[in-house]
Length: 132
Image: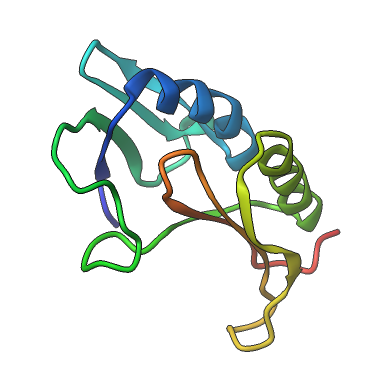
């Protein structure tokens, strides 16, 4: 299991505001915050990978097609939660890559949505259950 992932972002305040709203829907919670980084962990003491966001200052901006992070996938317990995350991404004006649906090309059951967050990171909410 990965202990944590660290991602550089151009605007830490914007990242935190975005992730503070998304975190509860993907079963994460705030773990630590400082002026130069913020971290989230799986909620309610569940095991899993922590996410750290750091202030980045380099150019070029993030490119998901370059050799780098391709996307982050959050496993959620129900298909309705996938739909809730999608609704949040829509309300936030994020670019939706794939609305909630079945993906028959992946191991089943696979119900997911994909979108780009404000920094251009590709995110996914996926349910690996038949739970509505």
